[in-house]
Length: 158
Image (cartoon, rainbow, N blue to C red; front, side):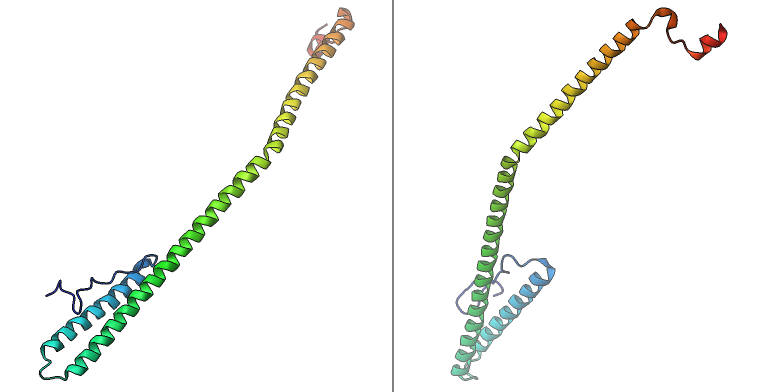
């Protein structure tokens, strides 16, 4: 009898997708358990219809089915909202990726310009070193060996 579902053999309700956390699942489990208890109680009332008015039992059964139908409708609506939110998030991610790709493509000239500037600086530095080397060579060839600059220690010794 425990695995049977009263009034139509409907499967137990499941927590809606998208609700996470212990609080939401706990509340849903508690609601589901209360509905199952109500269903069992109505089944037991059915067994005692001789003592109770059949009309009363049918009214309670109808209310039970109405509550269960509303819970199912709420679950479907919640799942639809979650699906819509996930779709919107997916769409936003896609648009964000596309915007990032476009910005990367648009910045290519800037990156190329930075490379060109860097290469120009390296070339200019190489030319400056060569020029300084030539200038130093000219200076050393223009100064006579006798008047060459000696370190201060050598001048003191002589």
